[in-house]
Amino acid sequence: MVDAHGLGRAGLVMTEAGELDTGYRQLVRDLSPIEAQVLLGRLQAEGIDAHLVGQNHALANPFLVNALGGVRLFVREGQQQLALEIMAATDQGEYVLGEELQAGETQGVPDGSPSKEGAQIDDPGARKLFVFVVLLVLAILLVAATFNAVWAQSYDYFPYSMTPEPASRIVGKWVLSALLLLHPVVWIFFIARELRKK
Image 1 (cartoon, helix red, strand yellow):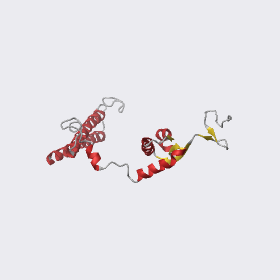
Image 2 (image 1 turned 45 degrees about the vertical axis):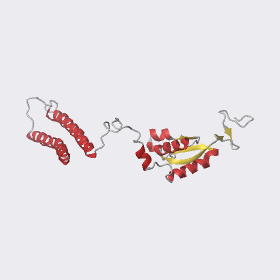
Image 3 (image 1 turned 180 degrees about the vertical axis):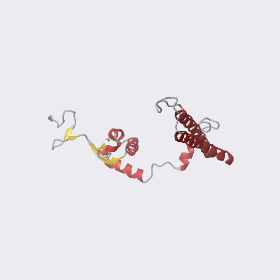
Image 4 (image 1 turned 135 degrees about the vertical axis):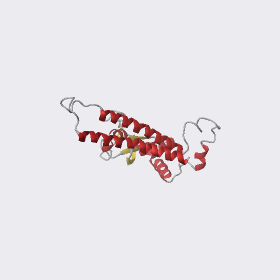
């Protein structure tokens, strides 16, 4: 239903063909949700009135992104040309921070503050060692849980608890145990090698 001023029920302008005219035009389609959000942020930072369509569908079910045409970016009709210029400037790298700006971000931080040292590990060797130790702890926990499952008595396998296990099953348990013990030993080897490098 259209009133005398050409406005629909929601206050949106109707075109002659009876379609709603929201004042927005599609600028780009087939974007991934992350690309769309980055581009939306850049346009909004430049004062462009823009919004995304289809982002929630793409995040909820990524398999439907192509079927729905990807995430689409809409801008106000009068701001299309400016938005295209901003997109071209972004593609040409005009908004990329220079090395001096990236290095200058830490220059304002006084020496000895927690953001320069402490919370982050800057030495790649120390990071690698930390990761190896974490993986060693996880390997030991995995071995302990698996040993418990493998060597715990199982009364449901044998009809009577006094029935001895077959020899093949016992050999299989020992082989599996040896292979499981090999896992932490490998991580210990990597940790020892990393400590020898230092």
